[in-house]
Length: 409
Image 1: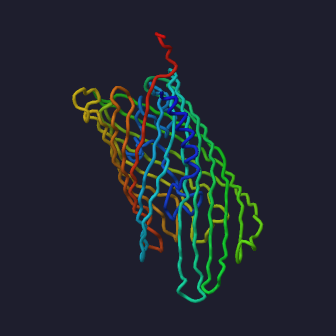
Image 2: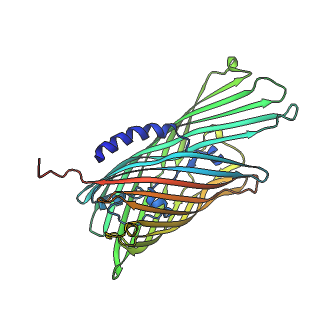
Image 3: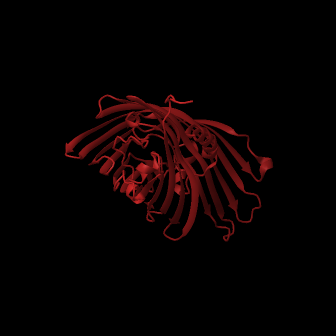
């Protein structure tokens, strides 16, 4: 059954991932768009903490975790988000529905493998500067959509029962389309510029995880992963139309060389397996070089990005037969993130809180997860926009045994 689900979901979500508008943030104008969270909803509900060598949930942050799986796991997730965008003088609301990830994990003894499809960044903005009431003034409308996705294939190996290592290869691809239309009050036809960029490139990720008992039933968990910097090629075409389509300029091809900065993710936590966990994660990423020719601006620069998170879960009694809610996993966390974007000499930061719950499907190790994330990105000072967001997420994690020979026909 799980094989049929995987095939159907892969076909459907591969199409959806190209058609979706994954963000409503004006900050997605810059670089290759707004960076998306890499990880499952179980980890996202703990603000990104993923340090335990989990045997029933897939951890796509660290490839060393694949070696701990005991059943083939298929997981898929999506989010409905709402935003209130505020400047010092105005406000607006926006919403979007996004695909978050699709991944499969396969145990093979001491080895574990995983592959999947994950969005890397999203572009989705519509900005209007309306000055039509002023004679001779120029009004401008900016719009963008698309983003970068990645497919990955990874392996994990359990060196000892406490220590595992892993690595994966990632191929990034996507298309970003932006447009700018200028209207001059009193002149009938506008001037427009359209840019279409196809982005592609690859990079690699390695990781290790270690756990040990420190007191009676209490364990210490550690996780470390490193993503190498990766080169991206952006093949773009620019079309300019002056005074109507009949005056359109022939598309001009442009090639940009972009770079994804290297990233280090370290996590540590304490807890009791299948009972509770309290952990923290630290992420540091080099600034790289992600500006295309069409979104370079004098008031914009980039810096190294970082993220600090604390989170955990509580599971009352996973073996309970009488109380269903005793087998529900409750999760939560808080985060503070420097996105790496600087506008008008002001760093764009993100602070938020997450809550979630995992509901087991009776008779299996599968579960349905729900999560909510709320916070704010940016600020109303220095001419910027503050994005107050609430994200509602759902994911499904199906577990099954593969490669087991049936004893009965």
